[in-house]
Length: 265
View 1 (cartoon, rainbow, N blue to C red):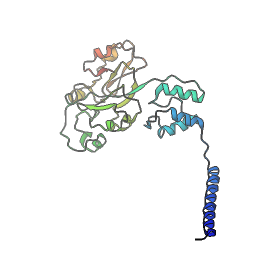
View 2: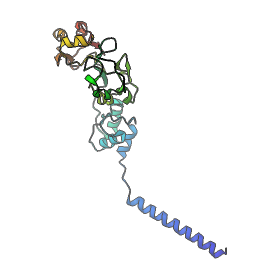
View 3: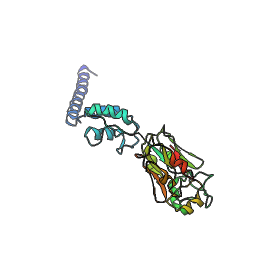
View 4: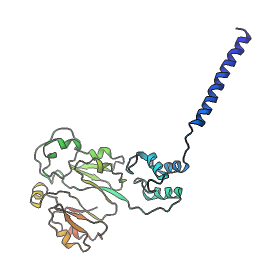
């Protein structure tokens, strides 16, 4: 190969490289996406769990919403108040006080407390139990099925099944709400972390039926309501409910409950 052929090849390669470089440069300018610096800073401040507990598709979705002022600065349930304050600083607003929440399973119907209609053998997934007779083997149609669908979706290892009932470790719980969404019996709710007492039953059966089905079920006897000095207890759908805003934590409701359906949280 003579020198002219070599120079021609070099020139062609250089020309192609120059063309590609120019094309990429123009494309970068043409298709440039402006980055919101606040959004990037907010995303960096978020914990990165991408749990969806805020109602947005992951932390990036929440960061975008906060930057556009479409979501409050304290919308992240995992980061809580500390992260909310950091994001408030980024957005240049005052951080609102937030109340820490935690998931709670409204049931104590363990294997030693409930009666069974039959022995169940099949897929151990609470969501599948809606296809079996009476929605599960337990006589109480409002009780925890105990097959751990909530355990499977919890990203923080904060919930486990013990003696046939799901229990939440409130120290680990970040109130993302995934367990609330997956429970087919709607037994799990988010309550204040500092709630002193709560009703561990959600049965809507009348007293005689509940007494037959579960030894720990609330029978709506109203003793808790009648004795609460703060008027923080009401009876609805045949079981007690506590108004956490009114509750003073005196413990009278738990002491008076003959079924031990009210427990310390």
